[in-house]
Length: 243
Image (cartoon, rainbow, N blue to C red; front, side, top):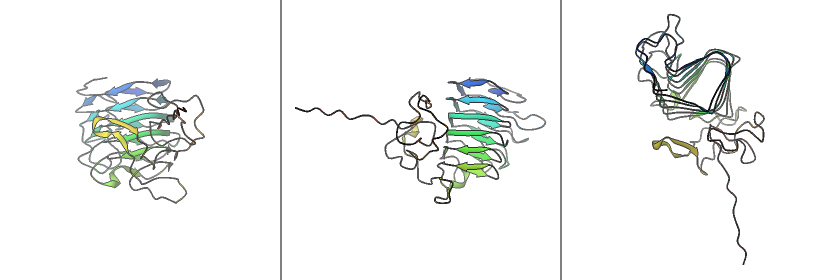
């Protein structure tokens, strides 16, 4: 956390090739030369394998303009990312191949129940998510970049049960184009409100069991189906007082 790299070769934050990283904050990492000779560097997380869950990856900045540097998470291997918030990251490369928020390039990668918001690249159109291969489901990509198309850029892999502005509803992929309604995005609170109809009970449920938790540590399945995004809307019971 809060690592500044003046000449990081791979990642200023975390490089993971196996094992599990959970319940962690990876934030405030930066580097003006975050690009290895072969490219594929990241200011936040450079990810080859293993599991990352219930983590916040935020405010990481990759200031290199060459060799395809990423901002938040760069997934290059058979890795799994679940229940994570990827927010406020920045990259300054000039290609749409790499996103400021999340980039996925391996066919074995599985990304599910992530919220990717407020990531920015001032030089290219890949601000939120760039997926070339792998599986993306139950993801929110919103308010990344200046245009709707900046939120999700896909050239391969599958994107299902996700919420992003350019989603084509009714095409069999179960994606939603309606805006997710967050509690207070300006203050960094990306939990869902009852008005988030495009996300609540709209997710792919088979991946989750009764004991699974969301990013906040609450039940992953609170309603009939899983929600889209890192946070599950929690239904609260109503108490009736009879006199």
